[in-house]
Image (cartoon, rainbow, N blue to C red):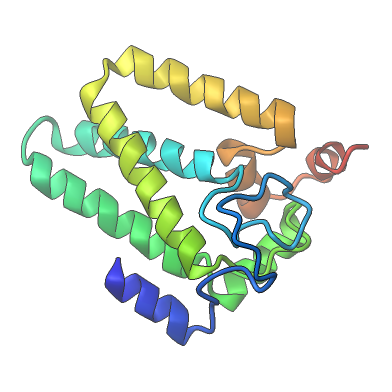
Amino acid sequence: MVLAALALHLMGRRIWCSCGSPSLWSWDIWSLHNSQHVLDPYTFTHVLHGALYYAVLWLLLGSRWPPLRALLAVMVEVGWEVGENTNAVIEAYRESTISLNYYGDSITNSVGDVIAFALGYTGAMRLPAWVSALTFLAVEAALLLTIRDSLLLNVVMLLHPVAAIKTWQMGG
């Protein structure tokens, strides 16, 4: 994570929100504060990353090598945090999704996202699979109802934008 924070710093990412506010969270996905504080609504998608990575790695590697699976998952998540803050991915988000004011994560937000991922991974590791699956669906539904976005919609809109979805997300 330290190397990722350094990489993000070298990419020009701020340590904290430029607003100077000491707030730990921002719940308004439409504001410039989104992705700039420790927590925001998208933090929950990183918890889902953890559960999803755990499930995929368990399916690929079975119950063998738990430390290797955890290390691979952390590497993928940290790689995503660096990758999503490249100019190309930021522009893709701004063009394809409802993240019109997205200019990249602060370093603090990226660290918070990795911690959220770790909580999701640990939860999936300790809970029965059906509990993880129901929790995943509940979080997706809660995000859809509250911010009109979710992990699955984010992936769909990045890979194959759908105008009708974007219109709905923007309140239309």
